[in-house]
Length: 406
Image (cartoon, rainbow, N blue to C red; front, side, top):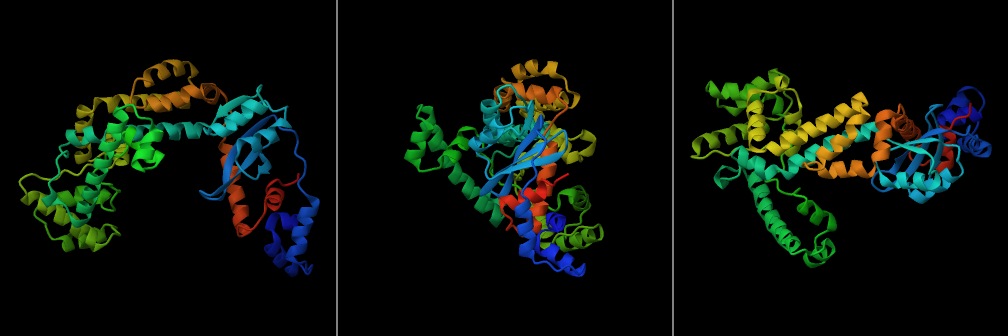
């Protein structure tokens, strides 16, 4: 009965035992699990540590995995550094700890196991590098709009939704100017927050140049079909409904309204003396600048070439991030010091400074065979068990079902 409860939980285990003609209540099965407790694991020497969500964005716990035996060995009730440090103090035999880029676990390991080697997770390093390039593009949006001729907005060409976004942009620009003026007087962020009433996070984003988009562009469902639409438009097909019917035969699943709005914007741009050049979102620009040129359409290639000629610092940032990805993939530790020196003078300097602060763990990630991918896999298993218990399983039951004996 113990193993039935471990594998299936309470009520599913009860249903199985009834079919086996061994009727046992769900409460009895759960009491059996709690009575047996969790088996004591073999003392690990290489572990992975990461957080997992009890409830996303509200409450988190900590999972610890034995990377050599590929098993979960403990669950902790929160992700506080003090809780992890208390558990690690009793495991002085640990030699290697793989973790994510968060500072809490790194501090806990440094205090409890100063002799242990910390290894930063390679997937998070790659993802952080890509995010750093997106941030660099976001900071350069003003220059990008000027390069592709979208710095001047003609309100007559805007749809109703675009006009609302543009009015919001003007209000944001006023707030940005006020905060930048205060910052130019060397007023601390704390005092700027107090004077303006805006949050600390908003003030930081403005000072980092991350709030300058005119339109908050999301990728359209027409994105893949734009080359075909442009071709049809150039041949004289201007009826939005007719274009939508033809798109439906090509697998387009969007609504008629999307195609008609595209045709309306296209028609207005042709009738106006100065057309509106829509700037893609920062994430879209980052994607276009990092994919192979042979996978871009003609319009996308022209856009990328225009941005590269107008904002050369972005080319340098892209090359630096590409070099970092190559360094991680090829495990070329000798390239790390010159990369740091180059990156600290670029648009991705904040990312480089983060790597500098965690340089020992990053160097271990490049040279070591260990990483924290196993912990991510064990978190997926934990989520499955948690959902099987409809989110009502307490820590002892979750740990008993995840840390299986044998």
